[in-house]
Amino acid sequence: MSVTCLEARNLAIGYHSRIAKVVASGINLSLFSGQLTCLVGPNGSGKSTLLRTLSGLQKTLAGDVLLNGVPLRNLSASQRARKISVVLTEHFPPSNLTVRQVIALGRLPYTDWLGTLTEDDERIVDDVLDKLEIEALAGRFFHQLSDGERQKTMIARALAQQPDLMILDEPTAFLDWPNRVAVLMKLKELARTTGAAFLLCSHDLELVCQVADVLWVMERSGMLTCGSPRELIESGLLARVFATPYGEFPARRLLLER
Image (cartoon, rainbow, N blue to C red; front, top):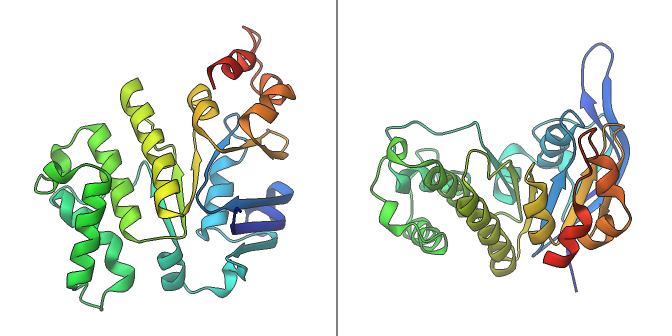
């Protein structure tokens, strides 16, 4: 039986200013532990705004986001850091750190004010290096890594936080096809083995349709539809949302590949 990790109730997202700018409203959704959920949609539909709001990096305009039944607004920044980890493709750590040191940053929510790692913290870092199969990279400097190695390192840092929810914005950006497949398959495996809920935003529509447990499709109107990839393909939603003057998204063909 799936356990609900995060819920949004009557959520409105957007930007706070003298006059609030609403990107989407009336959003109701659930994220389940042990599942890989993928958020897709056209550019400018509000996907990144939704991710920032669900992670607590951006305030809601209305409604509630609940993490394990507790309103996100009631959690302090340090409490959120122990429950939610976020991987943003454009945010990289200082290049003079080794891979092991980067991953160890994920333990900061649990350390003292000096950031001193305990034996347990070191063990968790070792375990994450093993899970991501990047032990050989531990002593290398971050700036020496390939794009795929950097992405795995950032995922490892987030995993070291031991979160209930991991949110990733375009984790396969700038990667070639083999590395895109490898990263998404590893994320699905980690969802199963850690029991955490994984939510990622991606433009790699064909791949996520084959890998995701659940799809969230966000339209330019702000409407959000949730369901299994098969359900959303068979309903015709994906073909409609991603239609172009040059042809239709080949959603039906993906059914044969799942």
